[in-house]
Image (cartoon, rainbow, N blue to C red; front, top):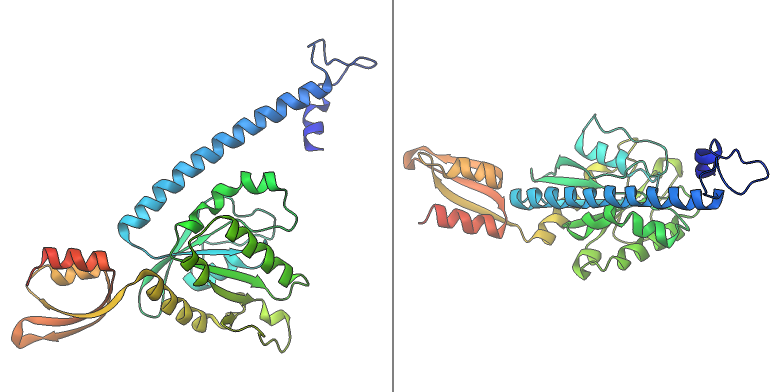
Length: 286
């Protein structure tokens, strides 16, 4: 219908199959405009893929754990990310495909570890296969994340069907089995269901809008990210006069510093990745 409105002003040939003497029939004009629109969309998706590839390389270099947030349209994904990060600039919108581009937002977990929450496109029921492929670029980041957070609207009458649809789509992306197995499921909008209590194991009930259950969710994410990324919690002895402490603050998550003045040193409790620990040992041997 939108396409018909776009070309309606060109159709003047009463009793004629052709438009304004151009030699094109109305059907041919529609097909040409569709091809042009398709070409523009493909170019935009190609630019989007390149942009996402660059962003992924930057995130990998800085070694921030990435949590991909998935779920149906209007399940409250963006509202939950806003609640978890405290980012006032995030503005949820009650509309289809409100999230089409990469949006990554930094948040801090109870362990003081910084993570990136990546908002993804909302799922729709009975989405045509061709449309799924067209928007596949918006789901590519899921495969490169450390953890998946599946947000469900438990107040929706088709909540179970929506869950099956999301899981089916994620399996279709051929994601690594450990990534699917470690997925954290959160039941959102429990404030709209009086007396709600989850019947499924290993889920976290929350109300992103009211702030209920957020601390429990952060604790669950903390443990899941540590397990998924293989990060270690270590206590390292460092010299106060050197660059070790500042390096750890930059490259790891410093939880606690116990200064030992008589030794000119400190015991530093950190959360650190295997690669960062290897760099630390190489830079500061002994």
